[in-house]
Length: 167
Image (cartoon, rainbow, N blue to C red; front, side):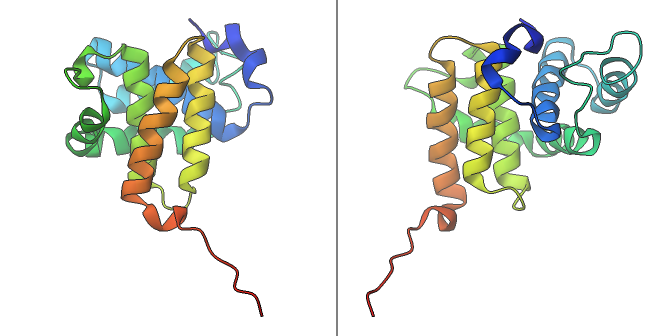
């Protein structure tokens, strides 16, 4: 299902949100076709962000951020996939998960690992919203649960509540 079909659910799409949606589509394409990351980045920039096949939802995407997500997933995939696997229900492996859901989780975990400039809570919220562009059922809750657990483990300092002491 294209992101355009559910655009109303997401509301206002920022440049980074559009980049994340495009990254999920690109990761899906790479997963299904075994395409090279640089070829996919070039294709998206030349055809989906601009050109004859331009997708209005993706046209505003932050191209650098988009490419950074893809490259982070490729560079750290041997680290990312086992982290996701550990969070799945017993008996489930990442290879059994829906391809789009797998792309969403990989993008989210890559950001948690690689983008300390983006708060973990923002990453979680953004990828839950991205999941809503593709799914109507339980998948956004799955994304929330997995990314929240991993963010708390990998960037726990961001989740420590700061107690205010009375003076």
